[in-house]
Image (tube, rainbow, N blue to C red):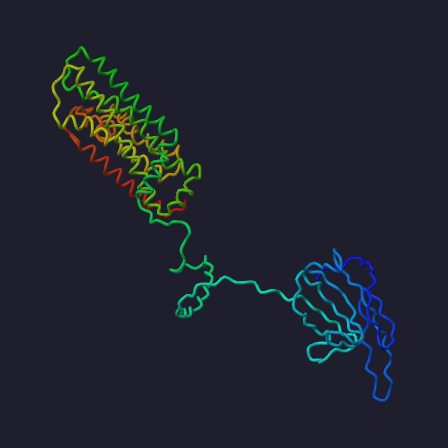
Length: 430
């Protein structure tokens, strides 16, 4: 329904009402309530006769109404003329029919569907009947079988929150967990030992001493006839041991000094695995570096000196044997560092073990009563054991261990010290 605009009054002749009432002026406001019915025996009050209403239209003239135009018209009193008789005061709200006409509008009572007939004051609302639109014919489809009823899906229960305190089998950690083994500890120790500057400096100095002193010895003895030329590589290796001892101590004692051992034990709670990984990595590194350098020095001495050809056993003892002996000495230094947990103290103790027996023996040789003790200290000292491995012992006698014997003795001592380090590592706090 469209809101009416300001009406333009136009007179329209209508038949005179019979009751003689005054015509109702056209108004756009609300209708007054219907007058009550007179009681029995009382004269009916005269109702004013509405005069013909002026059609209100939204644009256009009354004679040519457009589709959708609403007209508010008062129903005249019943009188002669065509059409059904309506009671006085009946108001019709009728839409302007489109050009061509439409069927008779159906009145709707404002008093509800339960009242029959039209009474004074009844509001009639009529709308134009909509013309049926032709619908396209749809192709007939064969009847389909009724679809089976689907069961409603069961509501999924929300996943329960993980119990972080319980260690039950139902908990799955979001962090990928892999079982750790010795390989992880070896990788960690290799990363640490090659990333610190002390390793590079110590091994660099050791290589420089062994190769440098070995080449100097070969150059100094190049014009002389010697018995076994490769045995003179002992002097360069003896000085190289002074570098491998501090490195073996620092491999483990430096972590105790800085407090990083707590981080190491947190990452790998197995203390035996940590100590085993340190021992394996350090021993292999020291063995490879020492064997390569001693092999280079042995080749230089064999080619530059005028001496007899060494045997296979002599070759192995001057290259692989020297590498194993130096590596075992460094492993012994690492075990001492694990027991003492102090860098300066462990290095001092190791230098005392290596050098002190030889120094004491030198002072005891002047006393006849202590010569047996002096000879014993010299025979089993580290410098004499290394010289025996090269085939040139200090005393020049067949007493004491010969050949690979000094290496076996040092291996046994290093094994005992390392076993003590494992026991102490498990029992003491970090």
